[in-house]
Image 1 (cartoon, rainbow, N blue to C red):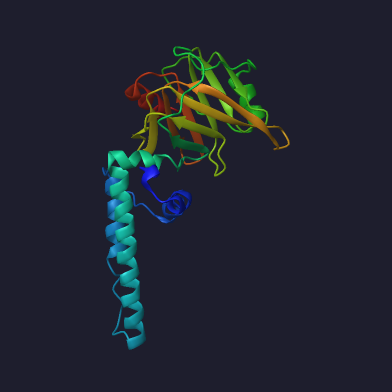
Image 2 (tube, rainbow, N blue to C red):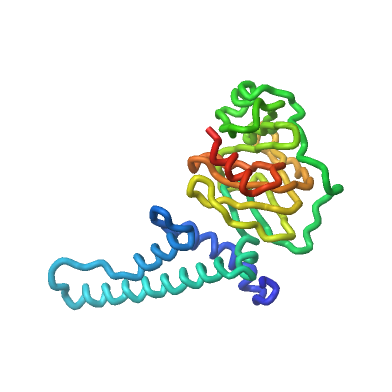
Length: 260
């Protein structure tokens, strides 16, 4: 879809979508889907708030202006919801999706390096989880059902803590605005939920780029590799996690929901 947009709009749309997303407050509605919660917010914003007492002329004008602005905002937000819920357009929205330190880009031409069948890399430092936690400065959450980890590692800048179980790997880091991982996927990611929070499932091999940063915080390059099926979610709003190497989305979600 993005190729059909004017050049100027293609350049500004990602920032506008991110800004709109940051400004939307989505209410917690028990049993509601993400779309229903967003629609509930749109309806709430579109309804004018009653004003106690008879308003004067100036207040009536201001109230009319507020109602018009709310309706306009609701219309724009409703359009965004329609776009997100429309499969051909959803992929274009995901193209600029930022997820707590992971930037996701949908690109049908993106080809992951390497040959199919290779699992995620192991944890070369061979640390214990306790040693990795001490080095990273935070305690990782671990899923039940995978047994004892084989090893753990920490990135040079001590921001990313990785735990490995053979061909299964979890990367964890504090949620951040600045991307640490970049994903380019030829197949749009699927939306799912982990403990009621939005999550993304990547069913196909895709290109994963890790930003390399030294202990002083200076970027010195990028590491590019192929990533297999991956679940991306946040834990408690503080940690971003990516679980790689589990073939089934259902099992990946169950493992994610068992993290403690």
